[in-house]
Length: 375
Image (cartoon, rainbow, N blue to C red; front, side, top):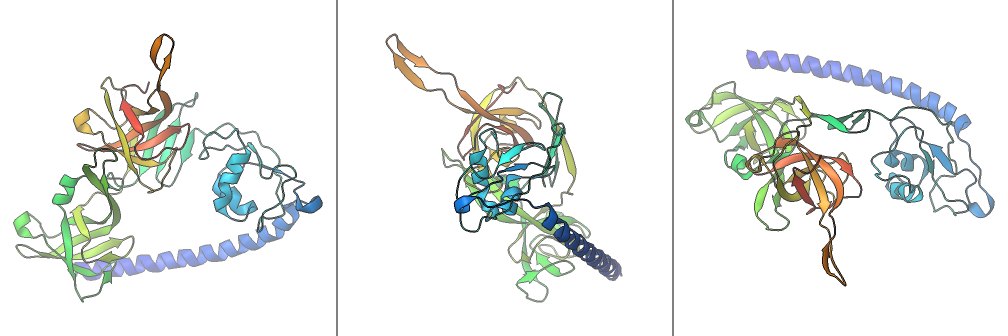
């Protein structure tokens, strides 16, 4: 009866979602039609001699990113580095502010094929720099002088990372009810844990898949796994060494061989800055987006954890060791170059998840970090 009631409730919820989506599509169509009418009047731009630009600037609006601006005015969003290159005052491409005046095309430069011929010139607005910078995963709260006060993140506490010890305890989906390759919400599956492991009917588990095994960039030691959170299931029937379970939430397709761990609700966690007198040195070993370079507001994984004295809210410096040079008096050790800062979000025993809160340049895997020097 409980399963039938849950199915009825979910079907009703799905119908409500579809009704909402249909309403949104209708509203979006009306807005787009209006914007299309307005944009023909707002766009201003003319082509100079030999295909060069005569209007060259764009004033940043709230919510703009270089990616979005490049998508609007250049051939593709992937042209955003061109805008960064042409505006040397932008230190970090993740940070542009309302009122910034961007040069989209240098004076007299010919257009590349596909670049749009019109540039919208928006009147400059006077707005203070934002005190909260929000992405899909985090909101960074800063004080009056720009210092980071706290970070709020909106995801499960693992933030896509588990250590080898956690993986050893993971359960696994071993079969689907009807033999299908992929399953989703309300489907029945069988898992390789049962009453002998202390499992009870009604227990919930998070379902995940290993995305990448991470080894230390210097020592090559196994450090942990980047994971993809797939959904949740609930145990419905038991045997001693296996169980039947119903998938109650799915974020993408779920397959035989996907793993289980005790359910962690997706809470919004607030991490205030916590000062520390402890010292430790280590490395950035991976980043969540799996890109060759990364910068401010990216989530990274480091090789320092609770065993090294790391706590949630600690700041760490990212630095380049100072060079050793010689002059006529002997050998000199130049000061280290501080190129950014991290804030620890989720410390584990030997590793931690951290957020890049400052970056003077793009980082790469293997950047040096240290605890205890950030203030």
